[in-house]
Amino acid sequence: MEYQQYYENRFTNSELTAMLRQVNEQDEHSCDVSVKVGTWVRRFHTSILKESGFFNTLFGNGKFRENTFGIIEFCERRSTIVEGAILFLYNEEPVIDTRCIQEFFDIAEFLMIPRLKIFCVKWFEQTQKTNALIDKYLPVSILYDVDIASAIDYIRTNLRELMDGSSLLNIDTNSLQSLLSDKYLSYVSMEIKFNFLVRWLKIDFLKRSETFQQMCAWIDFRKLSEAIIMAAKQDPIIGSLEVVSNYEYEKRYDESQTFVGMIVKHEDSRQGKETVIIYDEIKDDWYRLNISLTYIGRKKYFTNTNNKSTFFRVRETPTKDTVIELLSVDGRTFYRSKVTVQTYDTRASSCNDKVFDSICINDQTCVATRMTMVDIIDASLEKRKKEVIQLLVGNIEANSDTTVLYPMFSMELDDGDGYHYISNICLNADNNVALIIPTFNHYSISVYIYEIKSCSLSKIENSEISPNSKVYGCRNGFAFSDEEDPYVTLIEVPEDTDSAHDIVTVFVTDHLFERMIFASDDKLYHFLYYPWRENYILEMAAIDEIERMSIYSHVKWERVTSLELKVELIQSVIQLQLPTNVDRCHLLCPHCESLPRGQKRGYFETCNVSEMSNEQSERDDITEILIIDLSDDEESDSS
Image (cartoon, rainbow, N blue to C red):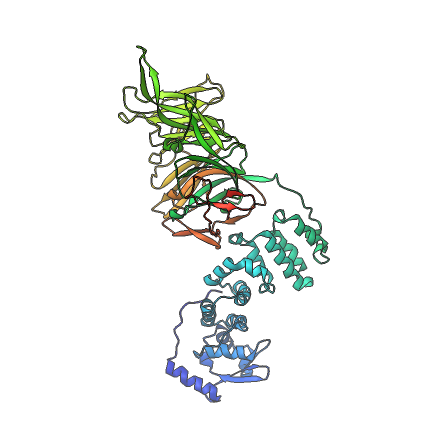
């Protein structure tokens, strides 16, 4: 029911006071209409009652028998509620508590008194929220179309406890469906929801059994344990229902879906907290994994293309060593290895900053670059030192605590035109390496593609690839993007080493404010903020469609549900393969800590994580902050 927020009374306060005194005295000359509830009868003023839409219609139509007999009789209502509603028209506020609030909503709706409904809503808003109060609020919110933000927040924040208790067992069907279907309440596990649904059914099996089977449509049985399903089947009441008796439990450990995942930094970077959020293409929505990554210091994340249910984290220790960790989607650390470099004189050395800056991982292959001094023998047979760029390649061994990188080739830095450096490096799923090497003096740029399998190196010249370009691995090649440039260049690496590389440069947008581009195996994503719309937009395009486009064609983007997340907080973009039973929360789940949103709406929420414990990760990493998995005696990041 739509109702007004303001009401201007036709009578002054003094007039209402005088008329109320006449009601208390039951003055027959002034009080011209009688209201009866059972044996209770009281007289009131027609002029006052006309504020009610119900009474106004009644008095204005001579066909109603109440006009003939001069008395209005109510059935199936308590006299105290009817009297309280009518006296409210005289500006007498009724005394409301949890026992009568629903009755006052009902009489306000029946008598069509908008002010009384507003009064009841404000009572809900101002009353301290408890489980008992929420028990009353839920049916009212459905029946009378009332949304009270504080009550909704309380429900969404405490639903797990509410379902574990008994205060919600008497809620009506509509309220129950509203709770089970609310995607923002995904932090409550399916087992809790199912167990509550079973308890709710047993309160009144005969009336609720049909509804129970309908409510089970909101239960994902794949996320229930075999023990819970077997217990339901053996229950003499629950097991008789078709939805339970016909369900066959199957082990679905191999069922999984691949998602685009983002590692998002909390704004308070001093805590080193990062959250993993995933995009579900089927539901076109974003969810948070039940995992929190905590480490103070520099780190990077990479997709494990061999097994996407895990991912790599590369981190730098306080002693400047580089460590590779393989993590699961629940935050456990499977193994950890320290990266070293094997020099030409067969001596192993620790990695330096330059190696960490460029390191990339795919499957079990690790690549990096570094600038180093090597001995060069010139034409006169004189030995001299020369600074070179080295490409380092190594294999990550799960049973070894060390990953050794070996130099594959070296390139001289000074070619007479200026001093070179490596601005970006990427390793794609086919184990091909892309290197962007610009010069300082002429600001020219060269792109090198090194194919590890064939040990072949190709140099590619392209004017659209800038020194500031970032490179992403994608299907059959690489995508190059400068976030201050409207173009994206795709370079496809041919299977035949003698064939030329296919290159296409496409126009993505003329909008160059707060944007980033990233790629997955087969899709290109564009994330940007439109200040004139005050809106963040995430768009997606298929790689194979872009590869078929002509040069400088406009990419046709498909709009994806927006994150409204500040671009600079996105640390890494990876792909994750999640089993169906892995817990995930909707991004707007209320059981959450805040991550900064964009300028328009300020903040979005992600689920609570437990307090982090401070432990040593290695003997020489005294100042690291990690989470310890005591069950496995391994270090892990778990919430």
